[in-house]
Length: 150
Image (cartoon, rainbow, N blue to C red; front, side, top):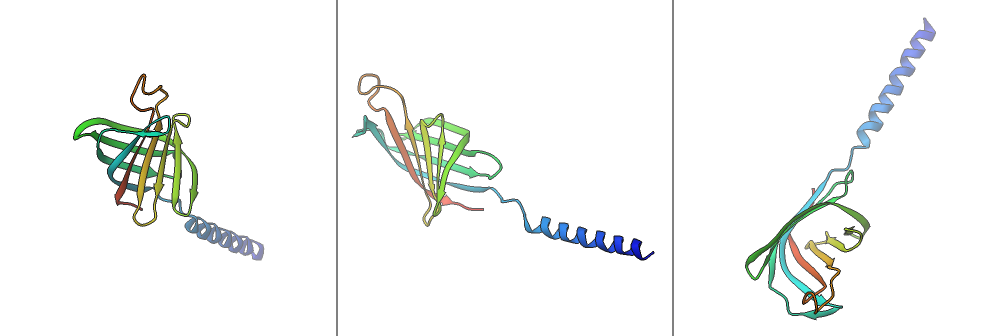
């Protein structure tokens, strides 16, 4: 009888410890940041060139269980240029509130600075020659956050 009671007490203690540990290690929640694009820089072999006026919206979802998701809705000179959603940006680093992500085999990079105010930039290397094929061969869109966090 005493051994049976000791086994039940030990089992109850183990279950209590497991429940306590499970409750203290909650999964980290996804964070969503979004805002407006306020401009763009267009470059030909690293030299700035005249480009269109860039406006639009951006959205970044950072979920510790999946690659980052980025959505861009971009307007050039007031006309719709592209709607883009990419769900496989890999986090390269996170230092002092600044996330850096990479995608498309390092041809695209996104930087999300979550410090106040939060800012976003999207850089793409187009892989074309300029000015022969295109007036620019890389570009960066940038903007500020309207909302961010959990």
